[in-house]
Image (cartoon, rainbow, N blue to C red; front, side, top):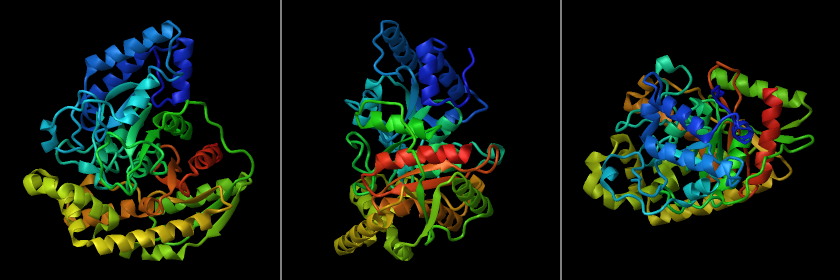
Length: 450
């Protein structure tokens, strides 16, 4: 059997439908890649149960033989970020001390919806502890290396590090992630895959370990925009359908304030090339200004709303388990203690005003675009010093966090050439315009990859 290294969900569904491949064979390939001693499976996955995976794959094959496949995608393996409850498994959120917690009594809604469509759960993927970093380091379970420059040991991006590496290395066709400040889009950009951050209310967060109730969202990582669109529909309980690209001439707004500062050479070159390709394909490229973004650094002082909400959740836990946290994670969470209730209230008012301004700005555009991250993934060794860690983590999160603050939906597509340093193109629209954004993203993907 020959299985493409990084197949799309559409390709896999076709192969299953024609009998070219079975769910058991797909599971065997996935498990072999996870177990490969020369690969990143041991760091990409915190937990997997091979026997359970094979059993579930056989169940899906039997259902398909009997004409009872739950969806065209039944039998395709998927990975689950270690924030999601899975019945009978412990949700550790990338930590060590939660490993002794009681197993979940039921699946999170997102996992339940994937299973209902017949997807086969491979296991739990590694992540930044408690999802609180954009670089993807984890001192407890190891740090999976980016698919790029693997011999150099580059960061995978966070916090959905294991999910991104699992997709990029062909361990699965799609993986679940969460995105509070960029945690789907950053690792997608650093591994040349697609990562989607939906509107925060779009997918149920029931059964998902929280970081910030005001900012958390649940999204997929996959090998194409269509993969993420299909997974998004399943995650929110809708009927999965093959997506289509938005037709006609797109009107693309290029965000010029704040997000283009300090781009490294690879990112700047690829971004300029993508805009040229879109223009050559007949799409309208228009510069847009949003000077209010100059205030973002002050709005992020002491971690802003996210840190305040993270501190409210973690304060009683830290009182008993601080020594067991990743020191870098707990130190960042502690910044939230510096924000008073009045500070947070003020920040929420400013946020509401900026969300409204963004909705007005984006009106009439099919997407607002900028680079996903201002840099290519640095080497893990480059983050050894604390000052470098804080600087690079801040830079990794800078552009993506803008759209979390603006309560938007956003998606990252690869914009680098094959084998070139990974760079991401981010497209965004105001909250609730997810379907429009996904259609635009698919059209954009076709224009820049052709």
